[in-house]
Length: 225
Image (cartoon, rainbow, N blue to C red; front, top):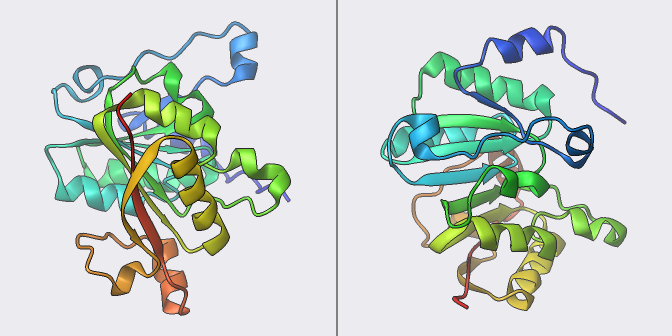
């Protein structure tokens, strides 16, 4: 069932212009001949040369907002295709005045249109949709087609930080990293009872952890060619 569009959504998005980088161009808009979005750089978007970190699937933006506040010398860009949810994140950042966080609307398939090769220092995948049916495996954000995109836009030494509460999806991800030339470290099947420090708990994470579900975590990075 499709989510009903929130009231005044367009005007709310327009009011977040300072933190909104617009839409990623998808295949349909490309075929219509619409303009390709400008390449994103720290200099263009933030007016500095700080490194860029990217969250894919930011939801309501709690994680992005918190990590940006903790790390003012890093520029964060959060991506979300569900605009009903994303508008809440953009409004929070607009109202807080967090200067090193911006948002992109759209799907991860098109990230290479706006990020140059080697321009992103790290990628966060927090509680991505697991798409449990095998027929939809290609939509999982750790499928090969996405890992190829990440490999291209990640800088040398770049890393993917992944968290999920879904065991089959986590197993799929570990196998996908291994099969596609990514090394892994800090693999844990119970993040909250591990020795890994600095975890920022998302809204989704807090809910499922309180219900007794373990949180799975891994850091993955492409091997040098």
